[in-house]
Image (tube, one colour):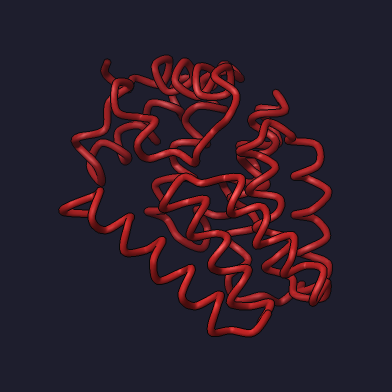
Length: 197
């Protein structure tokens, strides 16, 4: 983003307009909810739209994935794992399955299961080798699991992709995590992997 305040305000305006025009279209509500949560960092508003969308059409797999992502943000990693797994069962051949793998990596990381988090992150990286979120999760979980060399190698790749990333601006690139301890844990894992302050 160039002008974050203006662009976020425009995203919110467009989401609200789309929801009004959609006449309760579950796809519009779901995507709008994700935009509110991710771009505008309005987690409560995003949850409201995605929950409404899931009530209208509980068979849309991506809505369950979004719910899982929002569960991660709300500090509910076990619920996230269940919802993301449900999304994967609903759409086992989803061309965007890497998103579910990434959400699953984050959920396991915040549940304290570093080896599982690393495995899910590796699955993302097999499909998208430069997926910076998966690289970060792989580095942080690997560092906590004692695989420092692997973690530092991933950190080296992260620094090539995003040389401006630091511990001090990490929150800017992460989901809107509601539990301070989740951000602190992620930061500590990346610090161990070599991310500068």
